[in-house]
View 1 (cartoon, rainbow, N blue to C red):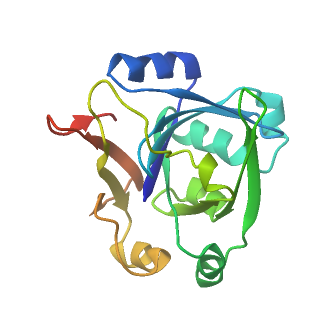
View 2: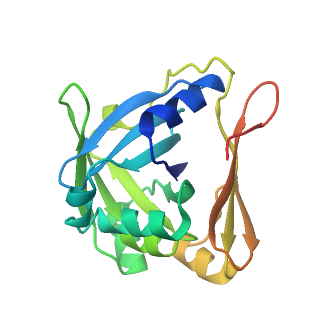
Length: 206
């Protein structure tokens, strides 16, 4: 499953914008020690994450916050990164040569959400790459089933990603390309457009 991360400067305003488009947005909480927070648009297995730096000093002091600030400095708001959920995170780490990291965030009600990830910092630096994430407790998966969107959106129809060359991406992915991923070769690599699926057709988001 593909997930997409959008950098914004104001989480509340960005959330209201998506709600005005007929999407259900939830408060994803804070990333302790990283100076960031998010909002989540959930689908069944997929999700769109709105991510913002909410404490610049904390983010600047954090090894995980600094890549977010650097991405903002390079491109500003908009689609910034994407992720996949592999079947075997340990095997994925071995294949791509990056360690498995444990991360967490706190929901507004105090619940701790924990996951393991591979290649997040590499994906911030070179956003044509995806990061790989798996959740410790499936009940806390951001793309939880059952979320209803007033506009009828059911998930990602297409995420368009520009790559410098197809071969490095295929090697990073380990073979197949998710069906909702549309790849093109260009000079400004990274995720560039997202369309949601609905009974009425595709809905452009970014």
